[in-house]
Length: 307
Length: 275
Image (cartoon, rainbow over the protein chains, first blue to last red):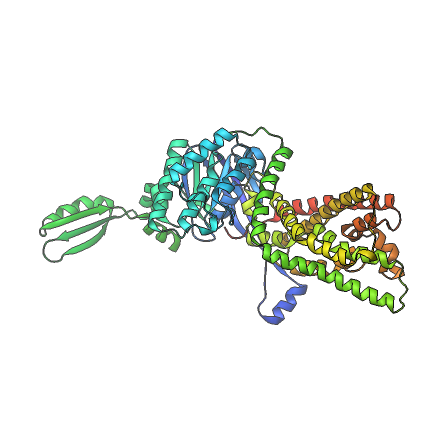
């Protein structure tokens, strides 16, 4: 059975559009202009156990709304949705105790107390037996290298330390499914690398299914084996990163460094022409270095968002 | 992967409440200086009211109650008012508006248990700060008022106080939940800050309202938020004790049903703003 199964999933938001100026504000008092915006439009998607899926798209494309419906934060307007065999919007204990949500821009920790106090609270929330809880905490502290910070009040932690604590608290009940929304936003390169290593480990070793939304293509290319691209609320692509690159930017990038002039040159060539170009390049001078690669995900996403 | 999901729901919520209560208690002590100043304000306002009414009596005003009842009422009102107060509406509305409600919605516990624990935790700290002030005030006015010596009356008044606190909190959930439909609920909050103290007896005893309003003031729900527990304690329940208890429990039921309904309808429209 798939972990997530969505059929015709749709979400519309109703909002009012304000008129400009004082006169407009007065008219708004008596006659509000309500509009509906289609955030997710007839989405079909299936995600299986153990997958690490990147949910990508430009701002306002509908990816965070999709994630919120999957995690039970929002009620779908139409369509069928089953997550771990539950309807998420019903927010049953059997569902919420098997998922975890980490929102990069919203802390889930209690600000004035230590991470250990938040972990202790989660022990009660998820009704975890003491020995299993202690084992889980020890494992997370070890994996995330938290022993020096776990007893420090959260408000005194750096952003990188805090994100690692967020992950520990979110995962202490050993969920089967983890939703991550921009988990590395604002982190320095060292903290980003630590968070990525941890996420790769829990996915590979504990088979936790992970659904990630991020604008950081390094996160995506390092972690996700499957990408789902959402645009204007609909599914635009579903496949591996390599397939997305081949579909969107099929040309190879060749960097040639010659000992003499012209020095370093960069070429973009069609896949089938690459061999011929390389053969010709070798005869044009003394080659010091040669690099052939596909476009990276950053280029791909830029091309997708501009199209 | 799941470690345990065995315990009944209510028992789990009680354990979570206990943990959150302890957390809120410890964080409330961090802000004890600020809370002390609030409690000074809580005592000063009724004290000034008491002086005003005593001056009115001294200049010959005929009141429908005795000066001893008035003094007892104003000495005790700060404790009753603080214990039945709630500040959930503002924070709940903010959480709905900026999407931080997500933090509670994606956890396997009631969305409201933290607000309840915060309410209870802060009240314990406030009580520790407020009681000595009231004791000093009572000692200063000791020969001008009487307190009941029957234990049952204290226990019954305490029960009514708990019901009043729950009712005020439910009213707050209703007002805060309006943020599901309105971008700004400050108007509702402001209106409730003006209307509720007046109709609950927090500003003046309801017995002092004009005669034309007496009948209405006895059955309207706000009376049971502040005035009623004090009436029970001081043995001057307007309309009779049993009738009053019936009204309070009836209004509690209405508030509970209405708060649940408003919350359930509201959460369907929640858009989880921000992340």
